[in-house]
Length: 122
Image 1: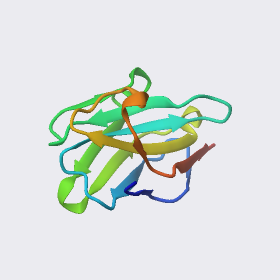
Image 2: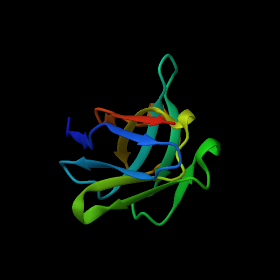
Image 3: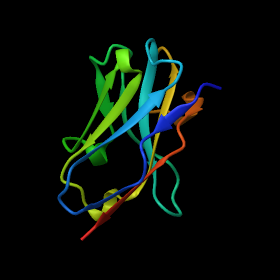
Image 4: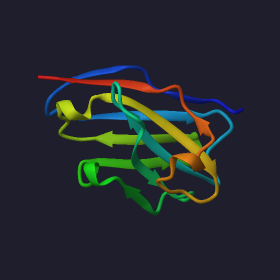
C-alpha cells in the first residue's frame, strides 16, 4: 500500500493555531482525502474531507468554523489548519485517502497515515 506520511507530534497551548500535513508518496490527484481523529480510549471521529479538486469540503459538526482542510495536488499534500485550539481537540489525527469520491465514512477509506499526536495544554 502507498504510504501516507504525516507531520510529527505537535504540542501547543490553548488558543494556538497549527497546520498538520500529510504527504502521499503516490500522489493525491484523483483521490478523495480526509482527516479523522482519535482521543485516548475513544473511537475514531470524522474531522473533515475534501474533494479531488479541493474545491468542495465538508467537516464534522464539532469543528465547523474552526478547522479548515485543504490540499495541494502538485505537492501530493493534504493539510488541516486548526485554529483557536482547546484541550478537547487533543487527539491523534489521521489522514486518509480513497479513489474518487470523498466523504465522512471511515469504512470507505483504505489508505491511512500513521497518525499525528496533537496535545493542547493550558
